[in-house]
Length: 126
Image 1 (cartoon, rainbow, N blue to C red):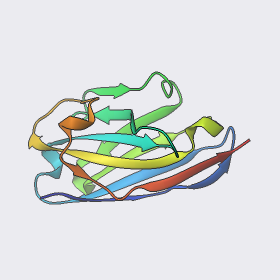
Image 2 (cartoon, rainbow, N blue to C red):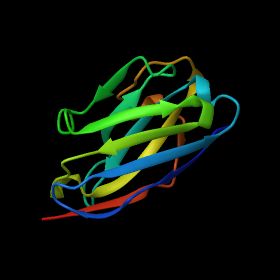
Image 3 (cartoon, one colour):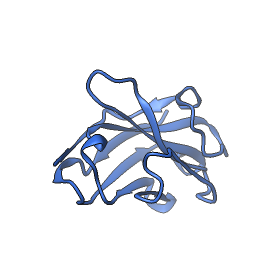
């Protein structure tokens, strides 16, 4: 079992930055691939970024490439999402997710993830 708690959301003006954190519990966290997804009102949940269990591989949605960076600190059981040059269209609830299997890659499909956090709101105003 992996419990995930996101933090770092908030309100920011366009062009600003936020850093999201996802703290995980459980001994398997350091072996779990992790992902960030987001869901805007009235829209489907969408992939944002993912990182392999070791941190060696990352994937990003085209809409955030060059602006967002995913990283992890396995010693602290934490995954981060650094978001720069934020746009109003980045407004959404952001969720982190963990793969229930060990030693996975940077999955982009939500179906690869077994554990989800409660989400943190990010609001970008123009």
